[in-house]
Amino acid sequence: MATDFDADRAWRLHDRVALRPEPFGALAYHYGNRRLTFLRSPDLVTLVESLETQPSARAAFDAAGLAATRWPSFEKALTSLAAGEFLVLDDAA
Amino acid sequence: MTALTDQLAEGLNSPICLTWEWTYACDLACVHCLSSSGRRDPNELSTEQMKAVVDQLAEMQVFYVNIGGGEPMLRPDFFEIVEYCVAKGVGVKFSTNGGRITAENAKRLAAMDYVDIQISLDGVDEVTNDAVRGDGTYARVRTAMDHLRDADFGQFKLSVVMTRENVEQVDAYEALAAEYGAELRLTRFRPSGRGIDSWHELHPTQAQQIELYNWLLARPHVLTGDSFFHLSALGEPLPGLNLCGAGRVVCLIDPVGDVYACPFVLHDNFKAGSIHDEGGFAAVWRSSDLFTELREPTNPGACGSCGSYDACGGGCMATKFFTGLPLDAPDPECVFGHGEAALAELEANGGAVRPTVSADHSKPIGVGKKRIPVSIL
Image 1 (cartoon, rainbow over the protein chains, first blue to last red):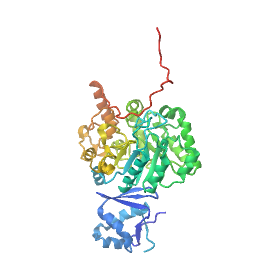
Image 2 (cartoon, chains in turn yellow, blue; image 1 turned 180 degrees about the vertical axis):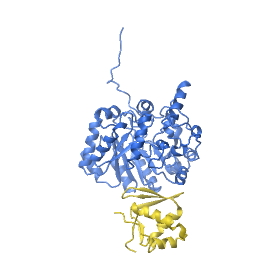
Image 3 (cartoon, rainbow over the protein chains, first blue to last red; image 1 turned 90 degrees about the horizontal axis):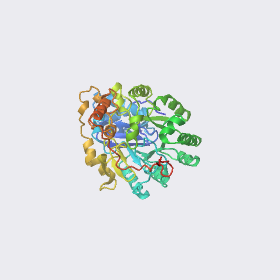
Image 4 (cartoon, rainbow over the protein chains, first blue to last red; image 1 turned 90 degrees about the vertical axis):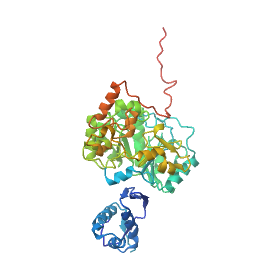
């Protein structure tokens, strides 16, 4: 089951999700639920890949050097990725 | 178009949706077959060549392939290659006429991961279906569906090509799919392969198309393979990318390894190269002349003055080409009737010259079976 996204918690890519770099960002495929989605900017790709190493999504925004004005749009993108189970809570963190 | 579709139109490192036909052999002779299948081609790829293609696709991170034909299950190495794909992380969705989905094969398929099945049925009753797919095929497909259900395969896809005769059965299709726990997939009838001739009699009417658009709009869970984007000119876009993906996000590898821009243009004009070329499939996808050209901005041509061009992009290239229209003409099924007018104009000017398929694998018709009327005076 998908968990509602909470930027104060730690997240990571689902083990069965693969990212393929593309000119617009990346294509993400979930081998479990067979969903395909677009990561529509290179910044979003960098952010998603960095989640695992950060204690929370919010910390990852900061570490990626993203201007605070852009955070809401990235939070929205991560919310939709969590809803599709592309992102899961990182229990190890 | 959105910024994303603009970028998709310029091409990707690898296709999103790759169709790979495994054989031209088929035990049916459907009147709308897009690949004019029937007889196996002597140059079809060997098992080892097939595996080498899978290796290339895995390298390119093609997440899944849509397997078709012909009837792919007629290849003796069908399961061997499916298993090889799955082992390499290339998911498999295959289209089948169901003839080889025995109880035993259904169990074997149910035990595999990353395998999806699309089973074709072109009418909810025997009369409607068998007129398109051949005598006895309705009963045969229902048996195949029963086998999948009994084997607990899970959610397969029931795939229907929309024709004038079956488009009004959509509610019954939905009920049938639900009965089997299947997903419903409706796709557009293109005048490709044996459909070049049958399309003119069988494609849905304008009024039927508008009803279908409203029906689909209310049911975003019904799969369409993005094939009805020409209907988006009616207003709210249908779910999907809503663009012609030929050579941009989709392409086709045929059973002999030739690479075409999409599954509906098996014609020399749209052949980009071969997997046997230097650099293999990746080189054809990334740098063939044809695909490079298809990724250039398109000229709206005759559609330039229409306010809906951004919604439908002028429609389907294959459908225009095989009805004899130029590629910058309106789609023959343009919802505003511009395509019908363009076809009527061709007729008035001496008739449309329709292309023929470059490689027809249809079986010879009924030699020895069909009575040829002979009158002896």
